[in-house]
Length: 433
Image (cartoon, rainbow, N blue to C red; front, side, top):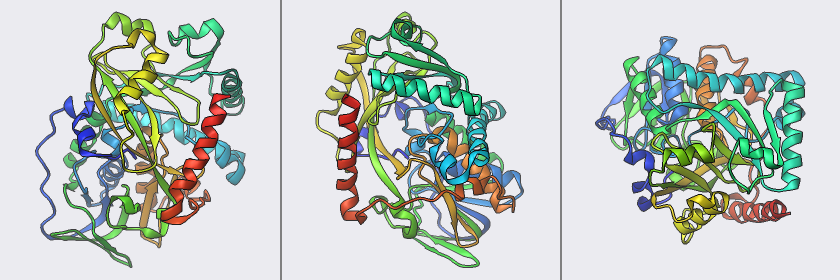
């Protein structure tokens, strides 16, 4: 999930600048009892709360900061079919039938976004269209193979272009192959998240902001302690980065080593001419290349280029970030060289070792959702739906994901970052070949 990397960048987020937040939900100041406690008011937590409320459960949701102040309100806004890991972990660990079910669930996760936008009347600039792009012959071959495999094994058909034909999808000389699909798309993530929060509250969910969980007592009954209150619950759902020591008290240290925060960053230009936007991306898709350290971008509804990429492995912002990001954007679109940059922000994606989502249980009554690995805008909605079903005793679909085996990042807290840096440097060198 994308979290604040520093205060200055947070103040320059295009998403925060383009919404008016509702009044703060007051922090928890009392002792409450409820059916289900949800920790984290991002997409996953809000989705779980909505689905649990539909099933008649009383739900209390505790958020350490503001609703969608982390990943859910700061990401690239790309609503993606599939998984960051690809289908390989599902096929190798679970077999073809379960892998097909996982794929179908991924497709359902995108449909769920569309359904909720319509059901709750969320004005979030939701648009269909996505382009996978390759910038080298080797990456082009990999892209063509991946699309052919998805078509053969899962019936997922894309419009693949190579050479000069790529210009149909994206007007850039950078790419030698591309694949367009109309299932995935993009939206304004903070508008979407605030819409989900309003929907949850209308269904009776109690949301407390600025209410970080400092300690969680486990047992037949769960008790979450905040600075000024506590919540007793029959069931719990951990839906934020509450396992990571980088972001405060560890609510679930037993699974913390299975995810790793990796920084990623976005710039937003000043509004551009609509005709230029139409020229550069004729079908208004979101775009992402297939490099290990990737670039991703799209146009906002008010014609700004939102361009993301770069990585870091500490909480420190990379040097000359805005200039470096603008230079990368200009190499893809020379027409945007020198375009004014109005916004620059960033944060951290929580990745698992194999980039597959990590969902599961801790004991009989505590569930966790983590490791979305950059595919969280759509998948978090599905995760919330599945965990609500599991709480209600229907865990078959949740267990597709809970059955996946996940390894810890090597080296513990001290060495996992250097290990990941070395691994990424290797993949960066391969991207250049």
